[in-house]
Length: 212
Image 1 (cartoon, rainbow, N blue to C red):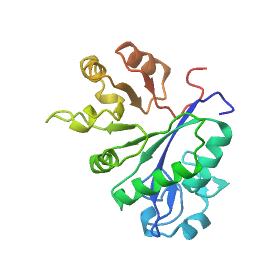
Image 2: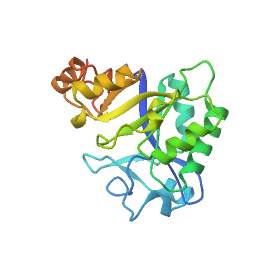
Image 3: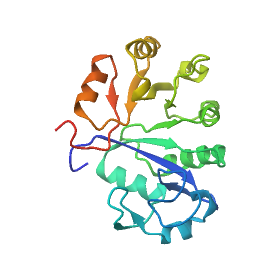
């Protein structure tokens, strides 16, 4: 936020005891010096682990945050949030607990959060619930059997593509359906401009200085 970001995307998963934690990878290593998946540990144990910098391997002097904590910080900074619902471990419960925390913790005067997932069962469960948040379908590979019907749902406002599968024809197809098209993960300015030239609306990037 201090560098000018208006939105931030982050991933959430359930701990073994059902607490919504903010963490990207399916497995703890290399960011945490522990074996296995996040879902193998309770929230209290996860909070005791030291989180390492992915690139340097150095201790960040920080611990894994809960979604409750992360929502409080994002609201304080007044940044929009895209919450990726990660994995298949108790994925329906993850949806429901995330929605409950948003209802409890997210101020009504801030931008409406966007929920997203690669897991179509997660998105399907989300679409069946009476809830106010739009969603995005994430696609790592282009579905040769045809686009998931969930993309055509009115609550689906965007589709997030692996930039390697983005073509002008595919992007136009999605835009014709009224969807915003975003690509991940783009850390090169030239690549970003190429994607914009074929109709991509925005990109996800780890490099906050990409467009400065």
